[in-house]
Image (cartoon, rainbow, N blue to C red; front, side):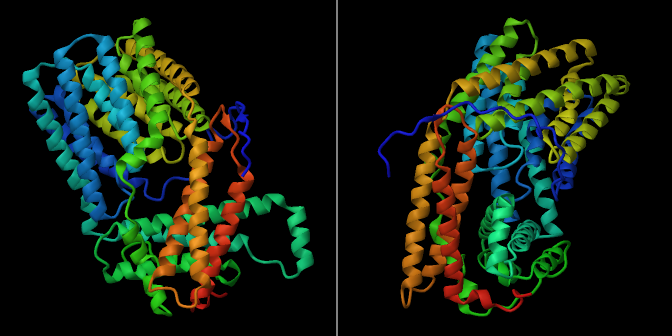
Length: 566
């Protein structure tokens, strides 16, 4: 390795093309959409019947927890949702106590920024998934600016806790009908991703045609690399889902064998029938039995199972360390956005704070894209609010129903593109402020527009100012991890009789390391003002790593399993 320090990467051109492109919806978009309607609707309609709609902000804190953990198996979802509710209650408690002790907007903005930074770091470290820290920041920031006394805090927290318990029940309810639904979906995604890679990797019939193909279409080669990386990530996610379920029931064993087939397809695409993989994926929809695929050997049963259990997870403190730059960006950007909003005389500076908090992604390029999406979505959403406000002002019942409709719309659209979801989130946030009483639409709309622009501009400026110099170190560490895992796997492949499960364990570690390397390289590629990403080394490590995985598959004889050939 050269000892010369690599030169920093210059600022890249910020993308505009494709930022607003509408994609396909998530395959489970209706689950969070329906869950949030039920979780929010029951408490809000109850408060409406009691004539206490002014308390809805506190029940919303617990109800919105129903948006989380929809991709997790139910055993893991129960734990994750419980932690989400507890985290929400902790954030709201800090916000309400602070609001009861001081009315200084300067102090409130500072506390809101620190909470947003902590929420960003914890959500990224725990990988809780969508909607990430934005909901926490929205609720805790709004709570900071709600008039409060210390005596009211326990009652308001009790409302949030009750709604959180209801949200937990709503999130767990589908498990009564389809107890293995999340694992089935994860396995189906792995099978489809492996089939896509196999379809792109059909070997040419002759060496001459192979050379001509490689010369004529470099984009095709890059496409295959992306498909292989996507397949590896999907298989990794499927294993993570399966190992989060606890006891190995018979349906789960059957799903494990299907994930094995996806791994085999990635290792030996030329010997794979993509149609068979897609057929298995289709059979996993609904509540029918899991397709039965008999193992050809004991190795099939052991593949990845004991390895994943033995590996465990990295300690939370280790996962928080690399996220320090993102936390600093969030704290600085949210604080500055709130203070600029205050200086402009806007009555709700927490909107600017939340806008800034919503921007921060894995790197500057993604943060820019999210900023464009946020601004466009919010501006269109303000226009939608202007159209809906007369209907919502017909009465409290109309207000609640409009908010529920926007809750559903936000979750139905946000997986297609963030800006589409923001179109519904914006009027919903504006209507929530009217639970305590109807307000002048023009004033609300003006404040929202100003805070959106301020939050986006100041938030992005903070992202540029706080550089993530650890991104380069993380690539080096990821490369070293892949190389160690590859060498260990290669030694076991060469061994005459590796220990029981040893090769399986090594394959799992290598596959995980390759997925982490790709994610780290993608994140670093969008950062500014740091050393250049060693693209060639990353590609070489990926190619040799995947070749080693393929060799391990052949070493175990798994490539000849029934059903994998055309």
